[in-house]
Every structure is written in C-alpha cells, then in structure tokens.
Length: 243
Image 1: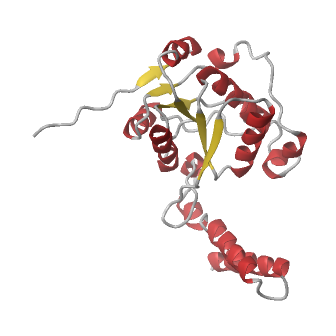
Image 2: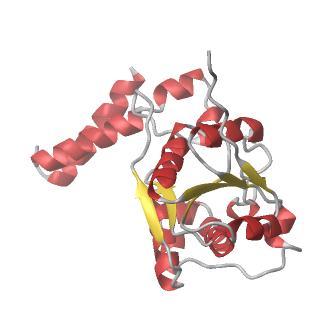
Image 3: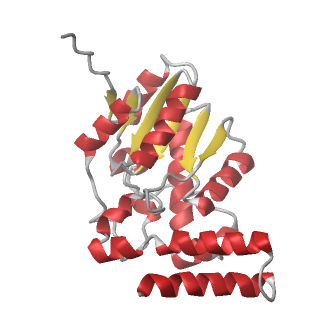
C-alpha cells in the first residue's frame, strides 16, 4: 500500500529567516495567530492556501495585546500540535518569532487605533488591547508583505480595527474576513474555550441562541416594538438556559 508523503512545512524563527524565505515567493496569503489552533484557524488557512500562490501562518503570543492581570502567562501554547494543523491545512511556512525578535528592547513605536475603538465594548474593557493588535499586525504585514491577510468574523471589532489600519496606513493588501466557525451547538470556536469547565461549556451556547432569537425577532418586527422584542428574546433565551 502506497503512503502519501507528508507535506513539508518551513519553520521560520526570525525576521531574517523570513526575509530569505519571502524573497523566493510571489503572491502570499497570511494568517496571523497566537497558536492553540482549532478548526476555525484551519478554515482560514485553507482559504489562504486556495486563494494565493502560497500560504504562511504566524504563531506568536503577542504580549502587547494583553492588559495587566490578563492571561498572558497561562495562554495555551501547543506549538507541535499547531504545526500539524498548519501542515494539514496546506500552509507552506510558519513564522514563529521570539518576543525579542519582534520587539527588540521593548522601547519601540506603538501603533494606535482610532480613538473610537478604545471607547467601545472590548476596547473599553481591555485598555491598550487594540494598540497591541495594531502594532503586531503592522509588524507582520511589513515583514511578510502578503497579498491578503485572513481573520475570523468572530473577532468583529478586531476586523474593523485592522481594516482601518490597512486603509489609513496604505498597506498594499486585502484584509479578508471569513465566517465564524462554530461547534455543532453554535458556540464560536476559540482558543480560550479550553478554559471552560464542563458546566461552563454546556452553558456557553446560550449567547448564540439568544442573539439568534433576537435577530429573528428583529426581522419579524414582533411584539410591542423592535427594541422591546429584542430584550424579551434575550431574557427568555437566557432564562431557559438556566432551567
């Protein structure tokens, strides 16, 4: 019985390694990640591989996007398993730099998002988060020089921030936003789902169900008014999950 040869994947540890690899490529699709990869990441990578001459993924737990007291130290790091995910998804190379290689002595320039993003939702709850995201992604885009860069719609505000970054700093690339990958029960796939215990994991899909019910009510214009209908659906779905 013939066995199919395993696809090779190049591991690049420094920006100097990346420069040598990049000089040999033409149209590149980039998927930035922090590792702890799941099926949603794999979907992004398969699309990058299909839409470009070659695909590369980065694995870098970026310290500048973690606020003080967040989970930087315990963030899951599963590099060997992640490389197998990349290989199976058709990725040609993995850029996995050190913090020192990306940031030097840590006293460099930071990229700030438009102020409105720091005043809203996730930006307000995580001061400095979007500056860290913009800074590391700008560094990756400059280093890799991709034709397209791929992100999941699950991180909606991040996608909006990065589209603004791309436009305002005139990066010559396309930010491609892909549909959210979900488990069978509707929970959006996320590396941080690994933190959930069994009870929390069972309860988590209520968010998806509640938002779906609110969406359906909005479309139907049901009840005493759109806003009241949305609140009613959200409360009803949340209460049902607690029973």
